[in-house]
Amino acid sequence: MDRQALLDELARLYDLTRRLRQECPWDRRQTQDSIVAYTLEETYELADAIQERKTHGDTAVCGELGDLLFQVYFLACVAEEQGLYDLGDVAAGIQAKLIRRHPHVFDNANAETPEEVRETWDAIKRDAEGREGIFHDVPKVFPSTLLAQKLQQRAAAVGFDWERALDILEKIKEETGEVEEELTVGIDPDRLAEELGDLLFAVVNLARRSRVDPELALRGSALRFRERVEAAARAAGDDGLVFEKMGLDEQEVYYQRAKKEQTR
Image 1 (cartoon, rainbow, N blue to C red):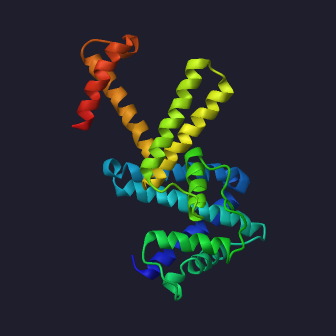
Image 2 (cartoon, rainbow, N blue to C red):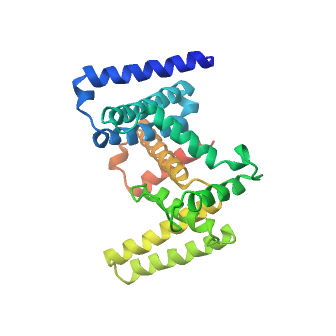
Image 3 (cartoon, rainbow, N blue to C red):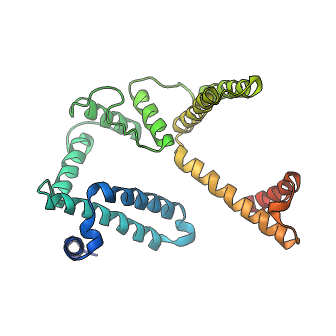
């Protein structure tokens, strides 16, 4: 698609969004507060499509990108009706921000590695944009793993970080021991929750320091677990057994078999 055709499609989506706001009772009723939950839902569906693109194809990703793009158009349309800003202001704002935060592209700054780009990005947000504090503008509503990762990244940006990933592994062992002690001595629910939180925080730190996205890594493990249990249940059914009514030892046999098949 050439540039003019692209602009025409974006303009048609803008006109369609405004028409929906005028003629559809459901769309007309929505506010930014009510629609943002759908925006989050579409974001997760896009993430799922990207992770599953080998199975469902790039067309599914394209479709989910469209759903998310419509959310941006819709939220901007609501703001335009209220005289706050419009889609053009949104586009102009992000362009100005990206140019400001990429002086190594649009100015004379140097940044040869992704790490140097990150350092420049954080420095501009702190200094040029006047954001105060190490943890400025980290939303508390982030999913827990993302919140932990962002806070750790901000701390690392000012030098407060582990020297090696292996050092964090030792911290994980320490936190595991504290969880074990809490389970052995006697369970205080509040104390156990605190120790488990420390353990999870340390694991996220290890993933971050190892350049692994903890959210995607955990998601992958969860989906593999689901596939293995479902495969184990099917295998048990093929043998005339009901997985839900089997003992744990029998279930484990089928689970390990499914795990080997999945790995193969």
